[in-house]
Amino acid sequence: MVERIKHLRKILGMTQEEFATAIGISKSHISKIEAFIPQTGLREKTIKLIVSKFNVSEEWIKTGEGEIFTRESRKEFIAGKLAEILQEEDD
Image (cartoon, rainbow, N blue to C red; front, side, top):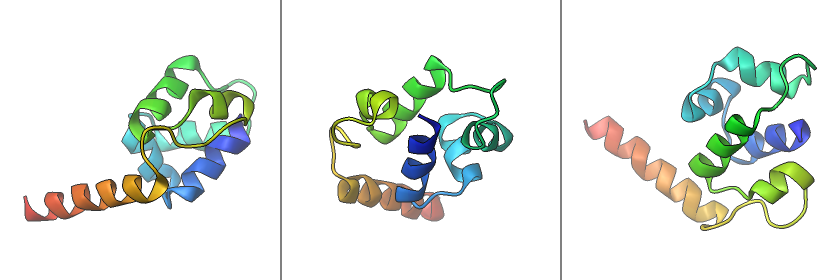
């Protein structure tokens, strides 16, 4: 699972800090998850946050099977995030 989280973050073009902020956890926690530090683990709550925030398949995160993204394509997701960034700059 941890390899898929890192893979997802890279697909999204996000740093560990950006990814962590997006789901409301610390950068150090993401770093520990990706480094597969046993005490950290990938909790169900964190998986749910990732699924919800990035429209990712929970099955893909847990098993690696199926499509990565669910409701929208990668291009749609990136376009939506770009729109959010541009709106934040206007504010």
